[in-house]
Image (cartoon, rainbow, N blue to C red; front, side):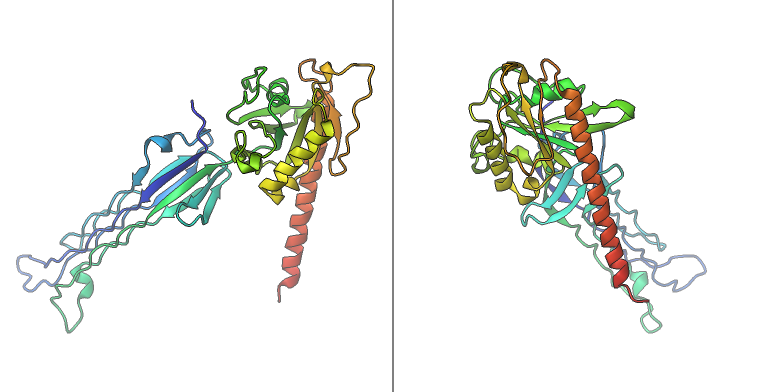
Length: 348
């Protein structure tokens, strides 16, 4: 299955049905009066969460989606049937934007989320609605309103607790495979990972967190070099980051600083996420040599591991769990302070 994380589609809501012009024709009821019913409303179009989906593949095959139009009104004051609403299922983590203006219409982040993207047209009024004491036989009626039509862009951003950032062949896929049941492609050449991967890491005590691995980042990725910065969108929603720097790199400090610079060039929000540094490929480092000194004052921890030899993995998992717990506590404290500030601002 192809991993599709962007799609532009056209959505057209249903047009409302027109109102009817009719008059009662019943035996023994002379001058029965107007009886034209209203038209039905056109169907609206919604985007809804589907936890079973992982990509936007369906929207590459079909790019125009239309909801049902409303039926016209009928005689006997019968209202036309409204058009059925159309629901477009998308994976969790999908952003919905107006393709022309770039305006953010909403996000689908959890099961049950539903977002209106095109409103159906209102049904027109039939002639019965225009009757007055001085205008008893109206022939006026209204056409149904057109449904909204727009182009929307769907952008999928994986939702995970931990995002792995590193150069090509830094060991991201190997680490994800060692820590979870995910089976990303692993090979001894650059850019093995061409699509993001997601895995669940289990710890003792029934604890777990989700980890995302994205294609390798090289210097100049924010300018489009290598695979560019497109895949950085998949770690925007992660709560913490792990910067992977291989020990077989000539200059470990330079590697870490390059990754930090690329994250900062992509967005300040990404650069300010809590993070740790993971020194990978410990099995290639001579056991009698001290590890290279790494200056990372903003990092919560520096952990050396070998995913192949399974060394340091438990220490890494616990370090990530502590970082996640700290991030969660900080977020809850900020939300509590914000709620308290709102209460203090209320007047009773």
